[in-house]
Length: 415
Image (cartoon, rainbow, N blue to C red; front, side, top):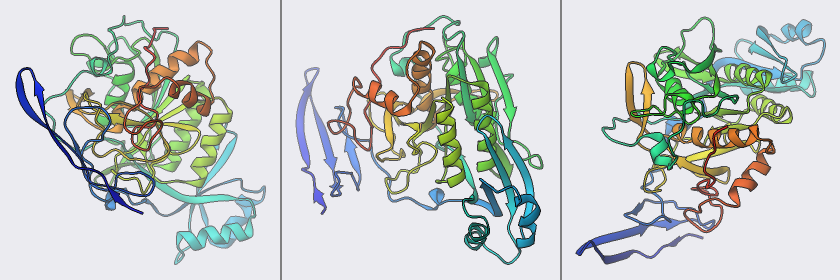
């Protein structure tokens, strides 16, 4: 059942002058989700303009002719070649207690048939394609915006704020020589394929600086400038496009679990993957707290992973008027909202304003990390319930598919 909301047009008096305010919610589905364009001027309970249906940009992509498998039996390495497969790489993920194989599928086969053949020969094996992931940012040119701490209403802090904390970031390449990281502690590692160059440094640098960059004056974020950041690059340049793959993500996640970071920020988005899902579940059992971008596909029809896994805390982006970012994904998995529209960020050679759920996730990562360091429970569901109970509700009353629980109210206190 679909229904139309009421179109409201009213005159309001502001500062002695009459101004026109309009709210137009076009159409909702039978679950109360907006399916058409939404426009709002003022107020806090509506969404920003939504884009149309999902396009090809959010269709699943993967490395051609390649599978990744885990839970393989003892005779796997000696027998899989007899089925026409070739082992490209064997990856030992010690912290996650997993062994993963990259396989080249047999000639004239396809991924579905290859997975089926493995399942018949090795019952209990977990196999999927080597999916590709995108950074959760927008391709746009912005001339104005706000500083991260100002948008969140966070007070300025000393550069030692977060000292003793270990933050993680699975993202893109980081320009460690950027002024945002002067006297900061960043441990950086690459997890892209060795035969390809790393991806561009703009996205990874921006997210890293939001977490630990200089906070003062024209700061590049600096939510927890005193923390140690473990930054993993999973992105590479392939055919003129930056993308990461599931194997790079698995290696990076294992490093985060090995280093026992307090919270790992994952400003990336891709398809559901059975091997990645298993790794995320193992990371959770290891006590790793994971925060991810909700995705920028502008759809409620296809969730973005890893944010949509139950063990992960997904964050959407809002602007300084508490409007949701127009390209943000919607869905039951969205847990919280944070500033992510027209945020001043670091990029190689300087800075620029950027938008995307990528830039909202670090706010929640920083907040949770401070509490985890003080002994708060690490379980994702417990974290969602704890912050959700006191969140600033936005949109429909209660948790919804646009804003989740809303904005975390608890003001951060330096470690």
